[in-house]
Length: 136
Image 1 (cartoon, rainbow, N blue to C red):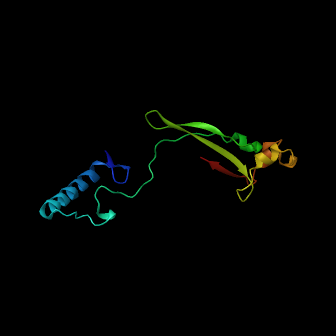
Image 2: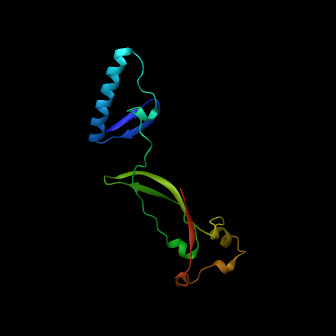
Image 3: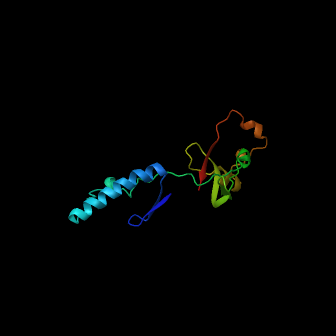
C-alpha cells in the first residue's frame, strides 16, 4: 500500500502489518483531537504518517565491464527492470581511474600523451589492481 504524506511530499510503502498498526495509532490520535481540539502529535517521530526515508529497490540493470580491460570508459543508457517489466532507464558511466579515483585513465589515453596506458593484451591485467568509478 502506498501512503502519500502531503506535508512532506513523500510516498511511503506500507505492508498490511504496518498499515494495521498505524491505523490504530491514527484512530487514537483522532479521538484525542476531537476531545480537546488540539494536535496531539508533538514531533515527527510520533506522527503515524511519517517514516524515515528508506532505500527501496526499484529495479536493476546489467552493465558490461569489458571496456575496462582496455581502460576505456563506458557511458551508456541502461534499462532498469524489475520482476514485471522495464520500469525506467538511467545514464551511467564506468570510468577507469587512478588509485585515488580522480583521474579518468581513458581521458589520458585519448590525449595521446600516455601511450604506456594502452592495454594490448588484457591478460596483462590479471592479478593487477584496477580502480574504476561508476557515475550515475
